[in-house]
Image (tube, rainbow over all chains, first blue to last red; front, side, top):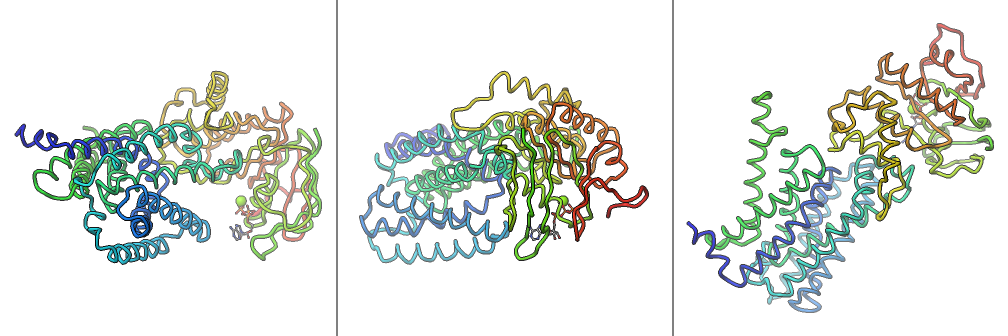
Length: 282
Length: 222
Ligand SMILES: Nc1ncnc2c1ncn2[C@@H]1O[C@H](COP(=O)(O)OP(=O)(O)OP(=O)(O)O)[C@@H](O)[C@H]1O
Ligand SMILES: [Mg+2]
């Protein structure tokens, strides 16, 4: 049993993957909590598909370089985020069909572009490959976490107010848009930085699932953030162990673990869980 | 302080003209009720005075007031009530100009406490807003308006979904503002209440804007 848990991390690349995923587990879920609160969960779907064409173009120009692919992903992610924000304003919040259209096209474009590059394994790009987590990728993840956490702390209050009451923010402070943009930038950075280990389609899972599950554990914002980080760390460790022992890609393994924790929260968490609803005064 | 003057103001939604040729002046420290039927443009006018709705014509002179000097309590606030935040934080966030390196100091926190106490919510300050009734929540929004410390206060139907006891309390807060020399403009539908508590009225109708001439008692505005 102990072997099952510890053996994976005897290997250098597994330790690198663990360190990187833990860094992301600290940085991404707090952003996910805000995405959930702002009812922007769909945005994360759009982003995970939207970054793919950018990563592909980065690879076409510079080969399998983490920085080139990452830069391409960030640029594409920002473009998609800004476009989605503009659509939301144009349609008065009924943008979901357009967003769905956008991510379908982005995914198709991304896959088509990648297929022209024979050096890249599409499955690895979409679902992650721990073997590919070299020092560069690790620095990328750790670097993003190092930037994202203090940045979120700095914009925390304006972001809370802008999420709670955008009308009030616009009337009094007038600069709601700036905080929103910084926030989206952090989201894009986190989604992109996880692509080597987790895959573009799965790295959003580490951001969103713990955030969704955290709603069942705490009624304060700070509490939800703490729970989300804890759940994400558990998912990273558990997922990597599963991935190693069952020989499945790291991305799906981690997301499945996070999904299991979400299910557990949904069933037994102290707030709004099925157990609570069945026994309100227990 | 200078009066707030509207000069031949025209307001539109898209191509539709909502208000046209409206000229009016609100003296500093005046307390005015804005009345008119549903859809007559009261909300739009209030937002225009706050600088949040573009003018299609005419001009508004705010007497040198900056956006930070104007507080607008929106109609049936669109605020997401399931947001995990306490009453205290909702109020405190409005007490200060927000920015990355600004903190909420002791004096702000004291102002927040005092405002919540004034609206009778001292015991509820660390409750999440989800746990409040509609009337209690309206009190929180009044406390928030208090800490904004604005010289022009705009209230859009502040007493909808509020019982008589709470209405009385909130009216006394409005009276405080009036006594402190702040200019207050409130959109209201209850003409009886307007008659008793508001020295001035501005009635918006399809054709014109009428000062201080409410329809007879018994007639409803709508
Ligand atoms: N976002 C909008 N787009 C288009 N037309 C609008 C919009 N908001 C309001 N209107 C129109 O403008 C007119 C004035 O609206 P407004 O909300 O200012 O009225 P009001 O006097 O505040 O009404 P109520 O008493 O119902 O609050 C209405 O006829 C309404 O149909
Ligand atoms: Mg209105």
